[in-house]
Length: 416
Image 1 (cartoon, rainbow, N blue to C red):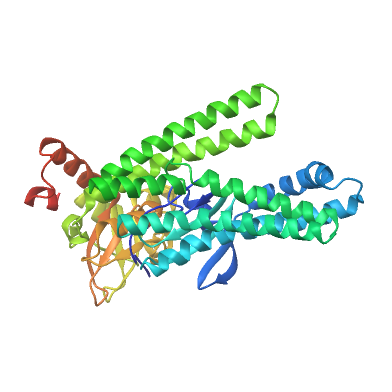
Image 2 (cartoon, rainbow, N blue to C red):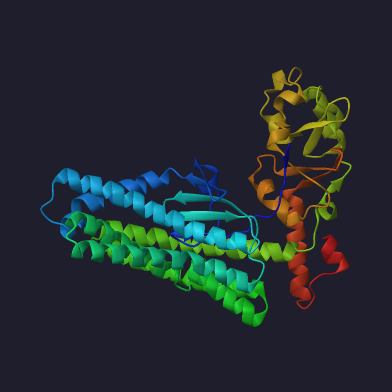
């Protein structure tokens, strides 16, 4: 039985991110590598693409330019080491966000390395503008610190007469981390610098939603600029760099839009709990009846589009929808039992009546059933919540805010 634990708002800067909501598949499809400082670390398959591009570019162009006249095998070995060090520095960037967030009371669920850098998935957003600012600057400061350390080490080894290839790797690592840190400090949401901008706007204006909307607008503008720059480079023959800048710009635009939508949704749903929106005492069907019996005795009578299915003792074991019935050929509906064709309970989000609606939205949206079962403390079914119920509440609250912008909640709006 999968219970909802809490909201999963997002933080997602390009290259190094503090979220995955805009791209949930990044985290869900990752290869788990273990835990560091109690945080689950994963690797998305797209990292292999970037790793190969990095190694190829380093071995054939960058390192031969920095340390000429070395054996080919040495370039390739150094390139592999440099690429591994780069991904380790990305992980350090995300760990800096995670450790500061944890220190400030925010749980960090996972870190995933992917195509454009890293994603740190947190259980909730920063509690205050000050916390947002501290979490935001932690990653870029870590990258700049790595850059300074690698540069100092390269300089020292050069004075000591170390092999030029070692200095070349360290010099490249210093440069790439400096670029990473400075890029993420740009005030374009959801880059880390954009989150710092939001924290400042939030602190001075006192309105987190308004601060997010403004910061997201800056992020979208910056993303479109990057896309335009990428198109210019691409049409000018600089294919890889043009594609990369275009990809970064697209990520910025989509992530800024998703982040702003998430924060607006959170604001509109504030104060609502599941019992406010759920359909109480839903019609249930025995798990042992056939699809034909469900159609004859339930669907044509009650006209609902989904039915929780229960065992004889009343224990819920799944959810059958009309879509699942349609998949059964008509000639087989007299034989197919509901427990065989329904969504099993493991695929259906389950929550309590006093859980916040915001906490249910991510698993509800990800579920193929599109509905959540509401269970009391003893595991008894007391209601059902559909995405359409949440959408209606959002529409009603948005309409109410538009008509009465000074009102944060009313009896009508709070019950949606």
